Length: 132
Image (cartoon, rainbow, N blue to C red):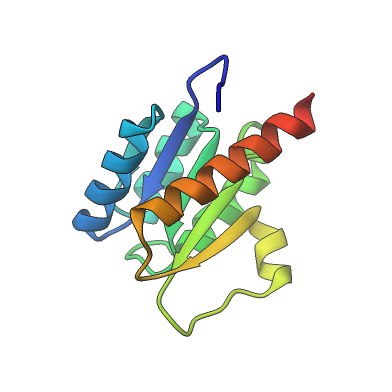
């Protein structure tokens, strides 16, 4: 897969080992990766860097991933950023919640780094196809 520009991805999770594993996998695949340890930090960083994609945990202190994504969707400059939501097993997000927060995909923990990379590449491809 070739992209003219390096894609920027924001990973938001309060578990540092998940941030490290996901960041390493995406960096090795050629993406520019930024990380945040909670929803408030993720929200502020997303507004600064305007990433092409956000990968966020659902359950975090201060602000959940869902709340963060909803707030970003309310801002004109970040409204179109798609997100992949990471959830604990057994937790589901309904279509209305997904739509309200621009969540393009949901992955249950535990997941493999390869699975995350595959989903990211699919979403980036879809986004590129929609802009052509």
